[in-house]
Length: 51
Image (cartoon, rainbow, N blue to C red; front, side, top):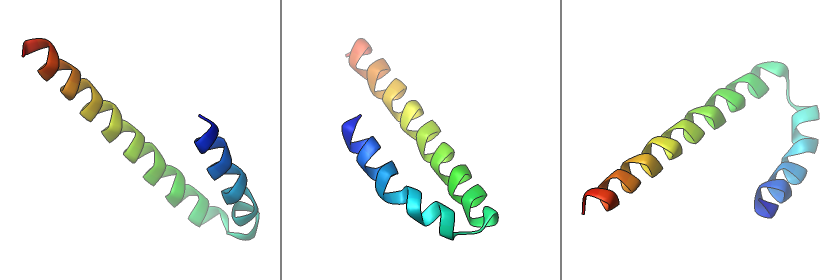
């Protein structure tokens, strides 16, 4: 969680410089990566339970 906060702190100044279009694109990309991570995590847990 601390690593995430450090990343956000570093990214924040860039957000103010970028236009809203880039911000939306980044947001969609971030959410997509997050959803993929959840699916992978759930899949791994299912595999471990079956094994």
